[in-house]
Amino acid sequence: MEQLNAKDYRRSLYQGILAPAQARKREHGPRRSCSSSSPLPVMIKRHKPTVPSELRLESIMHQPEWTTSRRCANCSTKINPARTVWQCSTCKVPLCIRKDKMCFQEFHKK
Image (cartoon, rainbow, N blue to C red; front, side, top):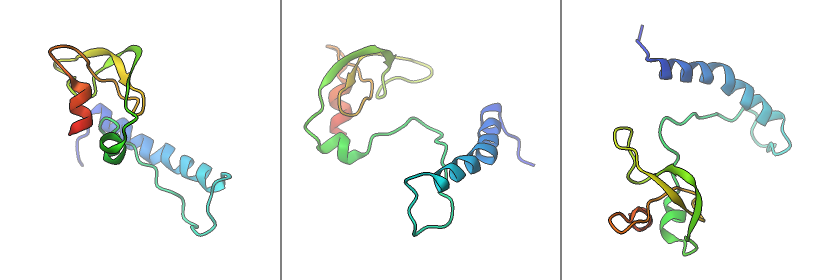
């Protein structure tokens, strides 16, 4: 049997218990399409949420806006956390805007 750390163990419990319940809710919900009879799979992400590249790179509506202090999505790591009070108004992703670090520009040009 495979050894799991605590986080992966909880994730497997969620997949086994909560995912089928969520799929049943979707199956009986108002937005269910008639063409599919099987429940929709529920995915639990392992990493940070990502912004689709079509939105992140092609839209011109990106403007910095003031928000609460959050970890920068571009440069912050577990070992070296970087906090910022700026976020993109379109992506809703926290990004640094400083003289020495322009994560806002880097994030939207990658």
